[in-house]
Image 1: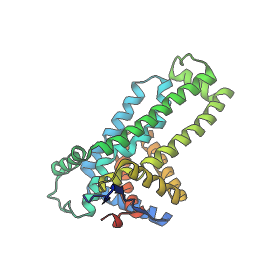
Image 2 (image 1 turned 30 degrees about the vertical axis):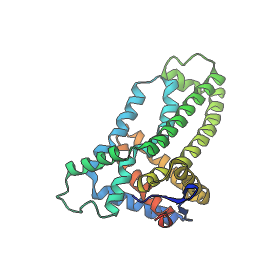
Image 3 (image 1 turned 60 degrees about the vertical axis):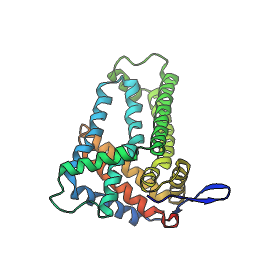
Image 4 (image 1 turned 45 degrees about the horizontal axis):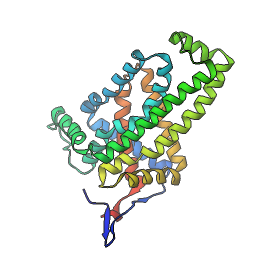
Length: 273
């Protein structure tokens, strides 16, 4: 893995990769390649993807309704970290490191996937993952404070009561409007910070500020494409969740692979050596 820094007499100076301007056609191609990766190696990706719906089901059955809504809405914020193994599998397949033969079985695939998790969970990747958890935590506390502002400090008695409060009252409609706006801002921040930072950290030996700044630059340079990508992610996760979370076992791998190919189209690392 090449080093992303150049050294001078005064110490190390970070080298930032170039960020390309991409189109919706590039996004379509990235998604197509992501689907192709899943089709080429569906079995182990399916089982790895089951981790996500299992956690989603736990969120539903293990929390009060006051925690449930912000958790379910905010859970996708950390999805880019959860998809780390899928980025690596796409990278290895792109580099020709995964055989395109039936002899490459599920045992080898699992070993590769979890091997990258062990070898790449370094300080930088864990730091960005922790940042996303902080963003998710802030969103949960914000949602709780918002609920208290509209309905008082007492928690809802049940999920039915919670849904009745927010869906059938004028205060509830205001709560939904304000909560949606604030949640959107959190989502934009999380997307900007993480959409390409994890693939870059996986691909190159860069510092956390370089990875995050590159990801934010990519969003600012391609606002329309990244907005469409965010919409695709949100709708895909929603669709997977509506199928009692089972659909996420397919959605998460496909989104993970597509993110890797989106990174390859957007970030030019050739100047980094």
